[in-house]
Structure formats: structure tokens, C-alpha cells
Image 1 (cartoon, helix red, strand yellow):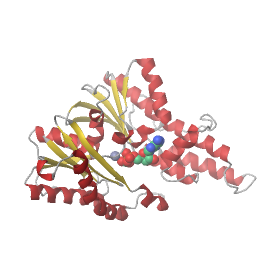
Image 2 (cartoon, rainbow, N blue to C red):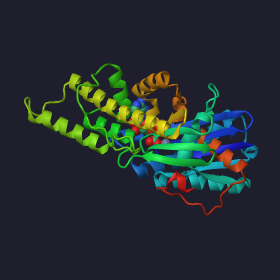
Image 3 (cartoon, rainbow, N blue to C red):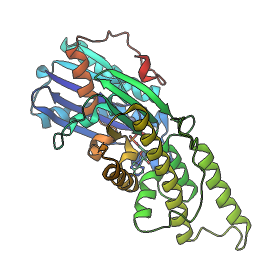
Image 4 (tube, helix red, strand yellow):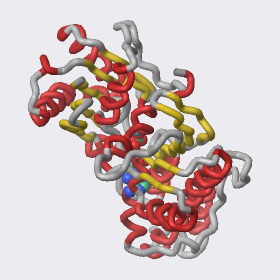
Length: 345
Ligand code: KG4
Ligand code: ZN
């Protein structure tokens, strides 16, 4: 079966073609990062407008690279939740129109299901075996799931406030780094910076709680910076060395929280494989620490290639294929939903 996937939940317009026999035939991603950078964050209305401009060319390019025409497409998968509702609606309406015109089935996909299945896109390494643990770390989500099969996800813990990527982006903004802060902090800390220079709090440090909290950490950074401005030399720009140390310490605290909760969850569930996905999975320090823990504990850590970790439509096409193969499809009354727990599906 050949499935066309469409993704437009946040600031990436993506289209991909997945063939059940040959795997990914194409995956095109058009990022709006440069459009939102001047505002220091994603502007929902702007995101929706940019998706409208990009959906047709991105889909045409996905078909072209796959070497197929629309009549070969046997099913359409599209992200319908969660995300920015205006952004979601553009992709959903586009997918509905295509499905109606072609007379093909279409299925709405939960964005997080796409992320959790993204390791199956990578043909370079053996896929994870069910059941496995999934950590999603992005700008909008930080959650731990037990995945027992395609379509079967059990939430073990999630952030009660900011997502890890959101906290990194806010810290970057506060420290005068370019948008998005997560990438800038990763880059800066690779050049140096002492991760032990500042001590920041880890939210819910206890073992019996698999939730995350990053707002206390963010407040601690704000106060640390404010205090600096109140001592001589008053209100001076932050010195480069101090900025690097602050970034390294802030990033280290986030990495510690993510790794600690993942290890607790693995111990508690007895699972032996951990999949890490979402934009923050690209972080060098997180990868380094996970690799070390993997060697020490024998846990297999699987991090898909960066272009499958960040938002893409290949993961949506694959999730759609699995649902269509199970005989699931949606009607044209399916609506976009900004907040929807994955486990409620
Ligand atoms: O998954 P994603 O592309 O979009 C969603 O949020 O769904 O993730 C974007 C987030 C941003 O917060 C960005 O700062 C963060 O991922 N990010 C990183 C890195 N690359 C992207 N954070 C830390 N280190 C990175 N290398
Ligand atoms: Zn995402």
C-alpha cells in the first residue's frame, strides 16, 4: 500500500510517501523557522498562512521524489491533533480535499503516535521490539510512554508545565541567543561551558514520580540572571564565559531530568529498549549521556536520525499505513483538535 502523509501541526509543512513494501519513498520538510525567528517564537496565524502557501509545492515535491503520481496513492494520512489548531486545519482540509477527489481513504493521525513510531523509519538499524519505552522531547511535549504495539500507548509521565524544548528556547531568549534557543544552546555548549558552574533545581526528583517539571528551573535561571544585573557592574551585558556556563548548567539539568526519569521508567516497567524522539533528541549532550548509560546498563537506546526526530510527514504516513492496514479510516467530519491525550484514542 502506498500512503501519502501530511504534517502541519506547528511550524513545519511536510509531505511524505511511504510504501508498505519499499519503505520511505520521499520525505519533504519545509521549515518556517526563519519566518518566526524575528518574533522569538511561533506565531500561530503566521504558521497557518505559511502552511497554505507550502502545502501544494511540498506535496508535489514529495510525489516527484517518490517517482509517482497522485493516482498511485492508496491512502492519505494527516496529523489532526494535537497542535496549533489553525495550522492543523490547513493540512487536514488539504488531505480531506485530496482524499475526496481521489476517492481514497484517509485517516487522522495523532502527532505523538507519529513521533513514537519514527524509529521504524530508520532502516539502518534494527527496529525496536514491542514493548518498549518511548521518550518524546520536543518544543511542545515531554512525555514517557510504554508502547506495547502499533496503536497501543500507555502514558507513564509527562511535563506538568513547560516542555523541555520550550524551556531551552525560553532560556536562549533570556540569554540573548538566536531562535530557537535549544539549537543555539546545544551549539554554544559544544564550544565549552562548565555544566557544574550553576546549580539549578530538577523538578520532581523523586523516583516514584515519572512526571517532569521545568518551570522552576526556568525561574531559577531568571533569578540568577537578575541577581547578576543587580551586582556590579550593574546591567552590563552578560559576559560570554558566564553565558556559556549558564547554558551548560541549564542544559545539564534538563538532560539529567530526562535521563533520570527514563531510567526510573525502565526499572519500573522492566523494559529494555528506550526510543528517544522529538527535536530535543538531536541534543549532543543528551545523546552523549544516554550512550554512556546504555553501555553501563545494557539498555538499548534508539534515537532516529535527526530528520525523523523533528517534525516530519514520513512518521505520519507510516502511522497512517498501520491504521489503514488495520481497517481504520476517518470520515470527512474529523476535526482538528489542539489538545488531545494520545491514550484517549
Ligand atoms: O520536534 P520539534 O521539531 O517540533 C516540536 O516542538 O514539535 O522540536 C523543536 C524543539 C525546539 O524547542 C528546539 O529548540 C529543540 O526542539 N531542539 C533542540 C535541538 N534541536 C532542536 N534542543 C536541544 N538541542 C538540539 N540540538
Ligand atoms: Zn513534534
